[in-house]
Amino acid sequence: MELDPYLMFNGNCAEAFQTYAKIFNGQVTMMMTFGESPEADKIEPHWRDKIMHAHLVFGPNVLMASDAPPQYREDMQGVSLSLKVDSAAEAERLYDALSDGGSVQMPLGETFWAHRFAMLTDRFGIRWMINCERAA
Image (cartoon, rainbow, N blue to C red; front, side, top):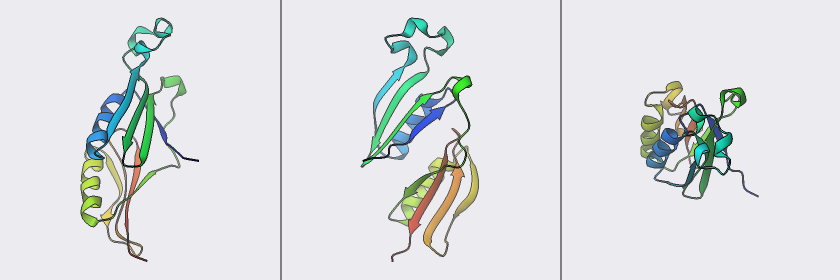
């Protein structure tokens, strides 16, 4: 079994996934708009350029997403995507990239369990935790 997070965006999925591909050194392996779907004629014209499905691979990880029409979209609550990294330098790089234009709930710093830990919401509204654990 695998667990692959599926994110819902407010019309900016393409920009978010292009950004994440750069940040995570990944590859967007699929990005289809509603207008490219077989049922494009049933989609409102102003929504046809929005993303129906996107798929991003980085390392062994997969993120999937789409733009959700307003009547189907809810803000992300009670969930964060947690990134586990091996070095303080990588934690700092990710923190700088993901917090740019977003909001920080807990700045990157040392904790009793981690060399570096942070909690933030990126500019796309996705909540992240960055964790560089101490050796056991």
